[in-house]
Length: 282
Image (cartoon, rainbow, N blue to C red; front, side, top):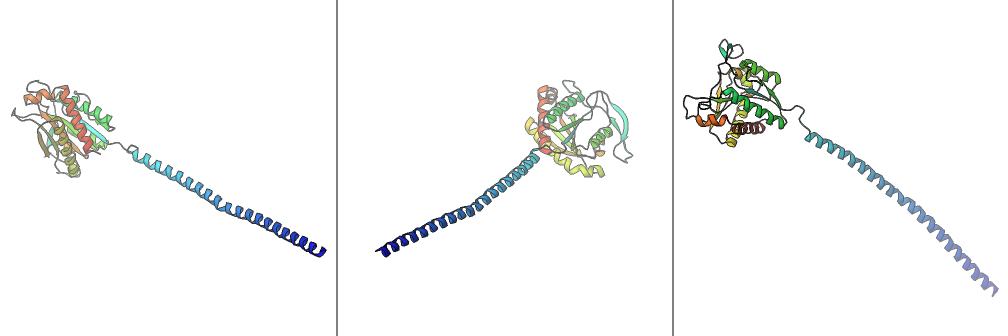
């Protein structure tokens, strides 16, 4: 009996020891597994932080790209406006082209309204100043060859202003006249490729001239007389930058004379020219 009791007690104690050992082992094993499992969690956090940092870096880069794409151009487009003629003629002569022996007067004077008697130089200057304000509001850099009707410049001098400014476009502002009072509408003159200067600028001048004229006549609602190449214009032959000359209508036509001398119509002309330049010079 005593032996049986001892045996049972021993057995119970052995089982207890085994159970206790198993519990300790499991506890230790669980702790070890928990610690071991923590490593990937830390790695994941680290990876998230790296991704976050990379994302921030990319965000900065993307922002920089956006800033670059939306920032103004390093050099604004330069438009030179040349109001034609002055309040007096300039009969001094100058070479028709570089190296040419042919001489031409600097300014023979402009036309005059058949009805209003308004001188062309007055119309030219008024539209030019309106155009200047519009182009500047669009962000262009605008240079004038002159700002007073009393300034009588030669055509070589006018061309050299555009050359010195390295203009993207020189636009010469004029009104036309004809022996026939029935002729009306706008035309655009561009340089014919006859020398080194005009050969370099002919193609671009043609494109600008056609584009501006088409926009102008469509917006204002006037007759389109087309683009004409000229080789007899000093201001063209001396130009090293794209140049066009717009004839805005005929002062010899009674109806257009009245229109050309009205502030409302001049505003339309200036807006049409501005929109044409915006379309052409980008």
